Amino acid sequence: MASQHRRFPSGLLPQTTKAVTGASWLYPFKGIVYFIKHPFLYPLLRARLLPCFILSLFVLTNLFLWTYLPQVAFLAIFHGPLAWVNGAFLVLGESAAIVALLFEAFFVDETLVDVFDAVLINEGLENFVASSRLLNLDENDPVKQLGKPTKPAVYSPFSLRQIIEFIFLLPLNFIPIAGTPMFLVLTGYRAGPFHHWRYFKLLNFSKTERKAFVKRRQLRYTWFGTVALLLQLVPVLSMLFLMTTAAGSALWVAKLEEKRRDHQANENNHQILPQYADDIA
Image (cartoon, rainbow, N blue to C red; front, top):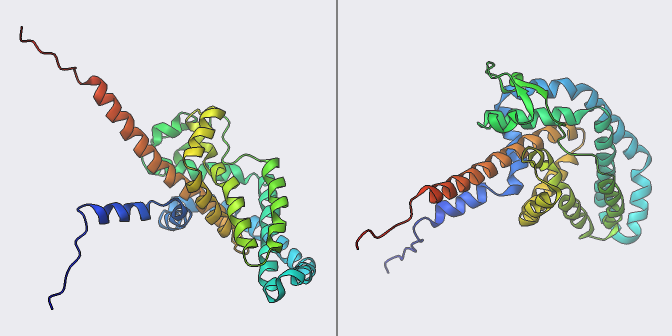
C-alpha cells in the first residue's frame, strides 16, 4: 500500500515555528543566552556579582537553617511526604522576596536599567533609548554608550502592594500538589508587567494606556513573570537571573517595537496614497 503523505497548508509550519519561538515565556531563557553571547554586558554583572552572591548565600543559608524544618513539619500535616518539596519551594520563595528587597537597597535597579537599555541599543533602538538618557554614539560598546539619564530611570518600581500580595499568596503552598503551581502563576500574573515598566516610560504611556496595553497581553505577561520567578528561585543565582531576565525583557521589547513601527509605517503609507478619482466626464 502506497504511503500517504499529509500536506500542510503553505506557510503553516513557518507561522507555527514563529509563534513558538516568539512565545513570551521563552524570553527569560533567551536573555540568558543573549547575556552569554554578548560580553559587553559582563562588566554590569561583575560590578554587583560578589556582594550580591554573598548576600544571597547568607539569606538562603539562614532561612534553610532556621525556618525550613519548622515549615516542613507544618506542611506535613496537609501534604505528607510532599512537604519536603513544597517546603523547599516555600523557603526559596521567601528567600527570593527578601533578596529582591535587599537588592533594591543595593541600587541594583540602576544596573537593570543599564542592561535593558544596552540590549535595546544593540538591537538598533538607539533613538528610542535616547529619548530618556544621553548617549555617546562614538563608542562601539553599547554599555559605554550609556550616558546620564535625562528622565527618572526605573526598571521595575518598588511596589508595596506586590510585596503584600506575595506574602498573602505564600500560604497557597500549603495546598497539596496544586498549591505551588498556583502560587507561581498568580505571582507571575502580578510581576510580569513590571518587567516592562521601563518600556512603558519610554513610550510615555499614561496609567490608562499602560493598563490597556497590559490587558491585551495579560496571558503573555503572566507566562513571562512565572518563568522569571522560577529562575529567581534558583539558589544563589537569583542576581544573575535577575539581570538576564532584564536582557530577555528588552529582547521582547525589540520585537514589540518592530511590530509597532511596521504597523505605523503601513498606516502612514495608506494615508499617503492618493484617493482614486475618475477624470472621465
